[in-house]
Image (cartoon, rainbow, N blue to C red; front, side, top):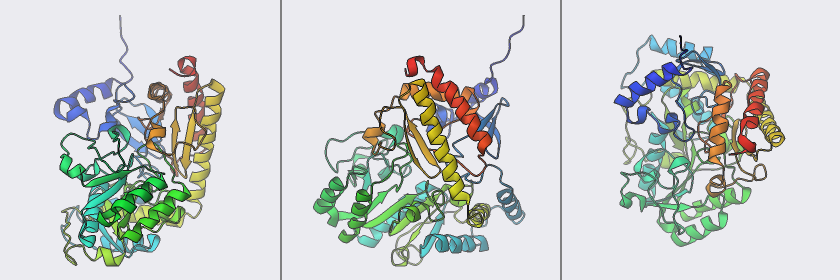
Length: 445
């Protein structure tokens, strides 16, 4: 008698080894599949629009390393740029020409007057907030419920996705993680995303104390949430109090346009934070904006920020190649929009056919399918998103995975499309979605 191995045997074995040496067996929580169940897939390789796991299973990839792989995996220009830089060394701890070139490109594309490179989105946001405090001499910051800005202590407050907690009062913040002192959380005020009246009221009461208002122009970590024109107007009004307006474009930067959501939505932030795409898949973050504020950064000014790997030559090369390719392809963003629109419309069609309640939010190449009975595009804040049927989503996710589609393993995340997705992947995805919706007992669980 013979027994066949599990189709996830290699991933299961790697996960067991990882749990023995790494907390939860992963280096970032969502990778553990806790909210969807099953064994996380350990990826062996990636090319174009596909991932291949340790068991040799191939998947259409809709996370794109959580956003950076807008050109597709293993893009020739990016690979060649990294290889070229590698020949000169992996790290210098000293200035190099590529960091100047990338800073020149970023400032030209975005309109920022100065930019400073770091090694992650978390570093970018926490550095921008320190800068705002140093520039204004104030200590409080304001963020929005369900917006995620990295895992610095002062930002893990009402932080979206699985971290979200609820406070009963306007402006009262609760830590989203053990290990965040209440004293840190007390310096972070909270308002509701897409609630201009609440923002106006809080700024009227405490605007004189607030150093910075930080926001995701398009939210990605509570699912895709799209700002209303009225909310954007209220956001810009906060600058009248002397607060620094910070757009967290770690996810949306260079994804929604060459000037990110800032360009797409006609925003005018004082500072912007970038990550993901700006490094072409290598570890990079950046923050930049008005010279008047950025010149407070050391060694020009008194606000200290440093990093051994900041401006790393390999990361700078990958970023230059990625942004160069985006700028050279004038039709790319329109194609991404068309593909993602067709994907969203197809998901709605297949869900309706199967009797599954589904509401889709989409901006450009970012999309979330919320398993709930709400008009499409109407999920506008975290409370709305939290009404989703997470058990139905988990079952659908597993059905999609079994059919070769790697969706984001959380109801409260965005998926990302990229240049490597074609009609072949679109049709295969919708075929899988049709079967996955149909496999849900009674339409939903």
